[in-house]
Length: 136
Image 1 (cartoon, one colour):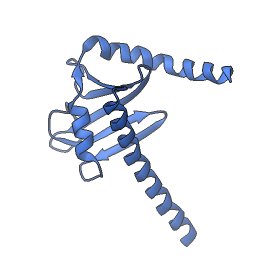
Image 2: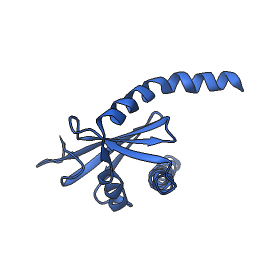
Image 3: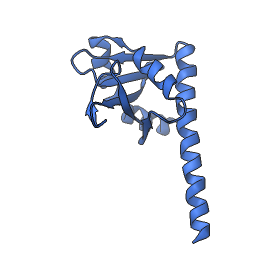
Image 4: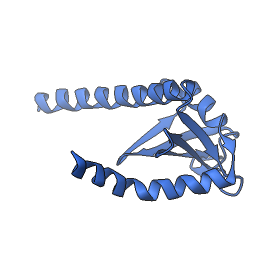
C-alpha cells in the first residue's frame, strides 16, 4: 500500500509541475509574440489563446457566490478550467502562478472575427495532426 501512495504523491507532484510549466510556456510564447489572447463579447466566459496561428488553448472562467458560475475574466474568479491536447487543468486561486494566469486572461482582446476563426482552426486541428503523422 505504501508503494501506491508514493506513486500517487509523485503523480500529483508531476501534475502540479506540468501545470506550472504549461502556464510558464504560454507566458513565454505570449512575450515572444507567438500567442494571441482573445475573447468574445457575446461569449465572455471563454478566453482563447491561439499559439502560432494554429494551436488553440481554451480557458473557461468561473466565479460567483459559489465559485461555479460562468463569469468573464474581468470579474472576481474562483477558478479557471483550461483545455488543450486532451488535457484539462483546473486553476484555483491558491495555486502557483494564479496572478500570472489572471494577467494573461485579462489581457485578452475582444475580437469577434478572430474568436470565430479560432473555433474553425480548432476544428481542423485533429486532421492537421493526423496528416502530419503520415508525412513522417
